[in-house]
Image 1 (tube, helix red, strand yellow):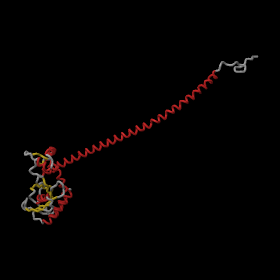
Image 2 (cartoon, one colour):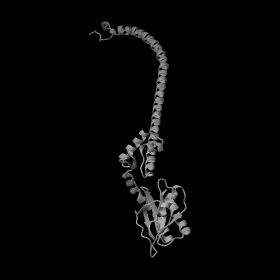
Image 3 (cartoon, helix red, strand yellow):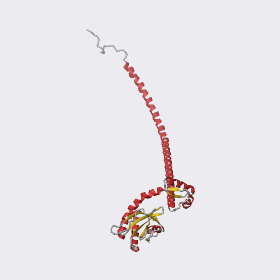
Image 4 (cartoon, helix red, strand yellow):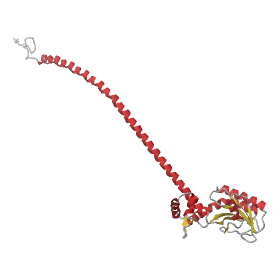
Length: 299
């Protein structure tokens, strides 16, 4: 009978040294290291307060940066304000120069014999050098010209502008002129000043009369002759009263006219002309009302 015990049985000899006890024996040592590892954690945690302690300094730096930005923004605002002030100053200088140029044109227009640079400077209250600069610009645009005698006179550019404006003036005056012609039974006209003379700018004939004066648009005459011209001269003094005439421009022609007042830059009169004497009181009231209506339409 085989008495050999099966492996691991009671009669089985012990196996060679089992490494497990030894391996288990190392565990206490490994575990023993854990407290040391854990012991390092307080040190690591201890560094956090120091890191946190640096945050107030960082925040202070941010505040300083924000303050710098605010100063930079304020500087930009100051620069923008300075630019605005400079632009405003330039705009004021431009407006002043434009005003002087327009005043110079008016002065020359009112001087049939022209003006010297010295005369223009005295009337404008500025230096000769400033007048020369104005003359240079206005001459370049054809608004002024210098004659052989050195005097300043209006240039053809002014006439060009006037011709462009005349149709607009005539259009604005036509309704009142039509009413006046029908009321008075006479040829009605709007006369304006051009180059020191009176010029018929718009003419309307009555529709119901058998005979009336054929007055040509563009007809010219001296301002000191005829009702239309003398009404313009009266308007320069602010006198709105109607003016009458008989045979001053044409033998057998009668006229009544009143100045157009209150339109900046416009010297004009409204009147009628007839082949028979006119009732000055009645017709005078009609031409005055027409002049006021035209002033309102053109203002």
